[in-house]
Image (cartoon, rainbow over all chains, first blue to last red; front, side):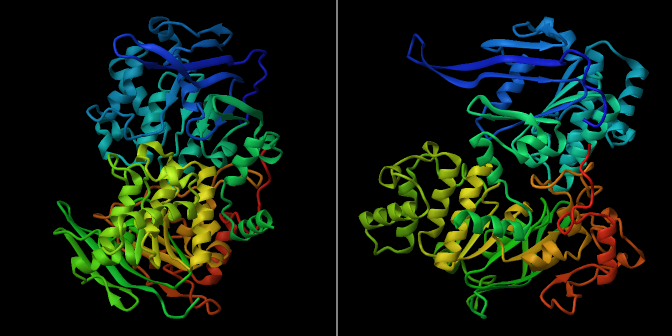
Length: 284
Length: 350
């Protein structure tokens, strides 16, 4: 967002008409498909190198399903997902494996996304080992560097996840995502489970890492304040569709779509005087 | 607003016996709640805000809990009240709304029946039909559409927002004078959150319902509170009116909280001001001020913890726990640019 010229001709990630429907089945012996949940219903967006696209929406809008469909963790019903110009929609596990180096994910819940029985060194080092990037003492050195890079200490190598606070665990999750030097990191609500004073630390860390490593983020969250802060562009999702897309300032300052307006109007303003004014205005 | 406090909490201390020794979750909290007032208790996880609220209605009582101090409701002491008295007070005098509307109802009973049960447990003379009638009225007053039909629905048939409305309806069923709302909107989407906040505000205005709002979200506080307590590691570090806390905050922790807020109505700063480190463990508090290790303004005096005192002659109700003089505070918080409220100082990033 703060550098890394995005204009290198092609988009890093290009999603066109992505659809993910889940069947609703009824019946005792033979399942009949009676209807579909249109979780993601034809969305298109792109992410350039080194930039952040924020995807906001309320619960049930389909934003998490969209992430999983992009990463092929869920097979899309239809549509195209191109990564560096190459179609990846419909690729199998094995075909996706080399691509996993390029695209990684940071999850919402730092308590559920780290294996409690593995040590930090193993959690962060496993991607390196599985992809055959490093082993032995080289692996250990790389992991320790990563830990320091995300604001932990190399002495944390042999600790277990339960010894860490929520914010520190999220840092471990970030170190794991960065281990393979990806080009794209999908962040699914990375700060919403954290305390207020820790949220800012993690947002700033993501910012710094982007600048340093030229990462592109697809940043998914329901908190439009955080999304605006970190994103270059924002897409607003509602009922499986993208209802508005534009630069962060455009979407927040001159929203065009009614749903976006409603969403923005509902965000509490942490300023009593302005909040009083706004309420006086809305009841008048 | 009457001068006599409805609820008065004095030097409330709550400790839990743990394997690692006594954990002082709440350490000397004082405040008063008057009729028609909304007092917000703000803090992060582990600050003691929820334990304070739960202790007021006796929900933290157990073998391993040490509760000291006094909680008086209209002059009646609650800390030493017996279980029967507390049972009567809960619901009739103090209603409570919890954070998670998913787990606050029993999933195998109809919502209406659960509220009817609550009404009849307290007011045995009320017949089933009449109680049901009252629930329908309550549903209408908290904005649940088709109340007549919804009263017979199961909790899973309600959306999160509707369930939270039903929760508020249940808390109000016996017309309490005090409502304790523990993170009532945290689990909800922003558009639903706005509706629930309006509802709480209307109840407060129309019925004079005094409310204790527990939250970590200063945006929510700005929308609804009259007075604010900021808690950190079991102690109140600052308290005052809403405007005092937002426009003349005295404690560096409050500065940090206010500074780290993202605003959609302001140009964004290049970096989000952040508070370094993380909250201390309650079993291993640093000597003196518990915020000291994270505070950029720490100095020699901070190894001793100051009392919660009014330090501004013009605002006797505005108290804080920080050794800096008011002049030093004014200078420091501006230099740091951490108060994003008075003047946006930073240019928007390119």
